[in-house]
Length: 416
Figure 1 (cartoon, rainbow, N blue to C red):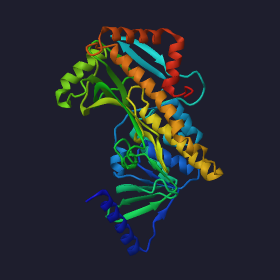
Figure 2: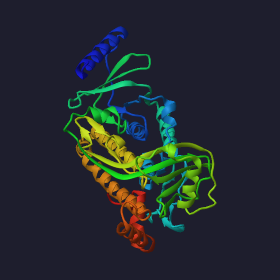
Figure 3: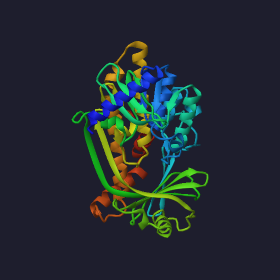
Figure 4: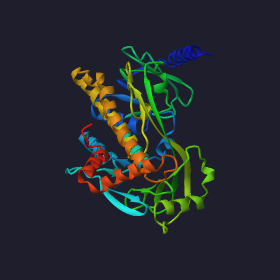
């Protein structure tokens, strides 16, 4: 069966189901695909702006709520939520004092993430906590959120009224017509793959680095910790009162089975420069490649790509989730302006505005990734690049101007 045959069958099923129930396709202003941080932020901001929307999520609510992801909602994003009157409702976690530790060969260096201004600061807030609070706020405000929406398909994206079709848990096929579609369903979602070939240009980069990521029931550090050593990079982040997330540099084609508990803890104690590091039960471990990806443009007709559907950034610097929150804010304001004032400027410039921030954060993440990895194990890059990376770190630790620029980029309060 071809794709056209499948679409025709789905169209027929929609008509049959609508006829049985005496229903015509539902109508809304925005259909949001995906109920992760991007989708639920879009949905909440639209409701605050008086825009009706429907959120479709293919997974169950329980599955979405338990996704384990990093970690820090940057200062810019905290202030964004506050500007919409949502900060107190959706930002849980621990207030972040703005101090980051970088440990080089066991020697500690503290860097302030503060941008020198008064106001709301970053939060240590795991992604699942943010999503749970965004979901609760949206539903409490009467939002329409439909989990277990299978076989989602997008149609007529270049027309005035796109249609989104999906199948409910009981097998009924539904259709939603709308003015705009927000594709917030990630790197492997249906939104971006619906865009015809040749419309988007993909800019991809493989860093050639792997990370073993470990979740353990072990005491968290006093502050986020990044460590450089001749054995390679490692990191230690808080994930709860008695839970920690660790990262260990490894070959990108390595396998988690090659890292039994004893090897994990030995590597962490060596690379973090902490022989007394307290271990605990490891509850999850996986290996992933550090990669970066940007799709340009971030829209096609009435479809607007938000977050990971449009771009992937190396986890160094914590920019992935925060870029998604930035996209969501730009999109929601653009739709609000169009609905309220018939001003389409924000919609027309959505991709341009978002991509400026995307490339800015990609550059910062790439700089930090290369610096912290090249400064340690020089097996792959050689002693010259190791010397360059060490010089960048020394400048960061000794120059007030360099540390201020670093703080602006970490907080998201730089002018990009």
